[in-house]
Image (cartoon, rainbow, N blue to C red):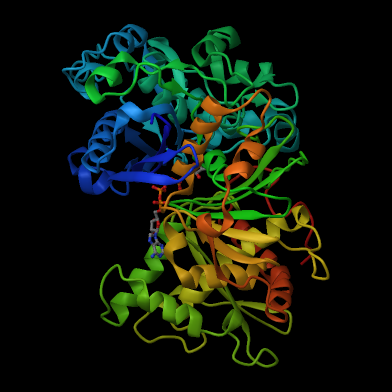
Length: 596
Ligand SMILES: Nc1ncnc2c1ncn2[C@@H]1O[C@H](COP(=O)(O)OP(=O)(O)O)[C@@H](O)[C@H]1O
Ligand SMILES: O=C(CO)[C@@H](O)[C@H](O)COP(=O)(O)O
């Protein structure tokens, strides 16, 4: 029976593809690992970098190669694409792809006997005749747009005003400041650009065979979309467009349909002939990887998702629009009147890996194993205090890359706190040959997790309400992304953040983001008249089959101790900002909720 739906997740380090049936049961999943499968691009952790300018980017050709390989792998697993009725997907947010003037005609006439790369990538460097006016897509980890961000933050008067209009103050990775810099750095390429896609709409375009519209939720990661009016913000558009004018950029970006489930049309004949999809398979709007993730779970008020991918993000679905320069609000990907609250950290998975590797190296443990990191984190007492009445509290910040929250340059800070005094632990003692007894290297395992979760708690506390007799905290914490496989990390999330019902993870496949995309495809094709995504999901949701409780959330006494530590953590962040804060902008703590 033809009742299958395909979802993709094109993220920093992988492209994942999954197929579900209309009862939302997972039947196939496959992934392409960029570093392992495509070393030929010279990438590391999925990206190329130009540190002298803070640039981080990925070759568009890599994405094309990955699309073919993931389809091939799904097929090898027995996937029968002729049963697929709908396709949707998710892309890492904020990245842009620049299409050439020939893009539409090339996309619309692909030869099924040749690869996507052969046909779309075009000629040799210098005389590009393919579908792209620029061979790279800026990555969300890029930090090259400080100057442009300052212009964006000033454009509407203040960072607060920009956040009020677009859901976020200016951020290095956001597409508006990125487009402005692209324009300034590559004026000729900008002129040669006919259309600009986000990573999500780029992927949709390949499957559609023409440039696809940008999605209503993913568009909010650009500092260009006015959330309240549901239109491009004219002033921001004019700024990003530079000399070419707002109208020119509007035509490059295209229209943004309000309905996240309305079909863009049938799949390109290329995929029908080359991979055996039915010509009737519908392409449903592709969204950002974080918006897609919230579609994998029936989120209720005060439920939170902690997504541990390359980035760490914290996501909630809420009817309240309360923008603030410290975090992001986006349109909900499927449901008008709902919004997505998001915090995003650059120093997520890779920062944890650094500490894991240092601990393994010191004790000659096996490389890349999480065992020692996990046991050390769990065996270290809360905040490093064996006796909370006499031992100093240990608090650290671990940012091997420039951080978004708070907006500071790269650095590591370790502090001891006692009698209301913060004492820095100098790096030479923490990392020297002779270890400082107050902060052995092993202490970093628990400290990095506590630090990451304290930051989430600090900034999300105003969005959660009391849970029964318990103090305000999340109801459920759902752990997703690569790091959700780690039980010690889930344990620490519960201890610091709470969660009156506990900490959960998905029990169907490893990838919430691609699942959310497949569910969106199913809803887009099968929804009844005016049927909301939430109702569609609710009807098919089987709690016992779909999620698993991994540990308790709220622990009386422990949660309260972390609550006390928030005040000190806020001071630690302020020290880091004083020392290495980047120049802008109304940064950054929790909207004045916590006093030091
Ligand atoms: N057992 C584990 N414990 C902790 N982190 C893990 C584990 N397995 C994978 N990860 C982390 O997951 C990250 C990749 O997550 P994933 O969601 O697949 O990434 P992305 O979507 O950004 O490509 C890696 O950076 C890795 O550190
Ligand atoms: O920049 C953001 C969100 O604002 C990142 O979350 C990207 O969307 C990339 O995500 P992962 O590759 O870590 O999934």
